[in-house]
Length: 241
Ligand code: ADP
Ligand code: MG
Image 1 (cartoon, protein in one colour):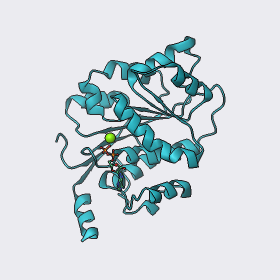
Image 2 (tube, helix red, strand yellow; image 1 turned 90 degrees about the vertical axis):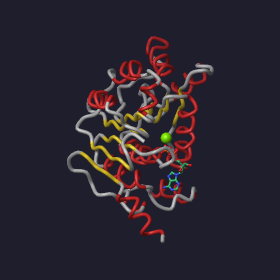
Image 3 (cartoon, helix red, strand yellow; image 1 turned 120 degrees about the vertical axis):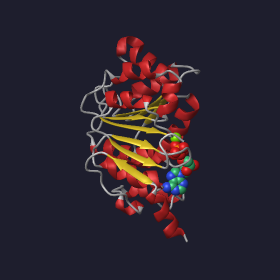
């Protein structure tokens, strides 16, 4: 029976860190706007998955969060839904302003997947999102960034290029207050740590940072300490499967 299955799934949730809010059971407990709820319903997402049930209230509480759950468990919405609320809570961006939120993905395919999920919500919310990745022309990405976007999804190498382009006049990180590292394990397996750090070192120290990964091997802890402040760790299933 479905309700008890859900209870069993939630029992595999582990939480580390101080003052973590309780997991939610329904979307109605997530503090989402009616426009966000409409998109969720339209897509047939009946209730939060276990990682969403715990990570969404943790992120909404304003804390840095490390979310660990296997592929296919719904990590994208776990960081996107709090992202939309964060962005909508900020004053509108002006013509010279860079993004309020930045999402790192290790590959162009993953960046595009996140971007497509993000776009479903951006239209009704009247937000703009741009996807910045290598292996395709940079000029269109630069033009989109210059028009302004609250949300940027990127791969690290190309993001460094556009930040440096035109003496730094294409975009900037001055208003960046919500940073996401998705598929963090792959990011570091692929050797992108220096590029990610180069960008993060130019962001505001008062930003909120969340990191999602299928696994969280010991070697990643040092990196997590560098970029997250007193994080809550939310884990569904094992830490390194
Ligand atoms: P992960 O990043 O953990 O690999 P994704 O975020 O890509 O997982 O989600 C996997 C699939 O599950 C996607 O097709 C997504 O649309 C779907 N999904 C996400 N959240 C829910 C939900 N609450 N209910 C049903 N399906 C969902
Ligand atoms: Mg994912």
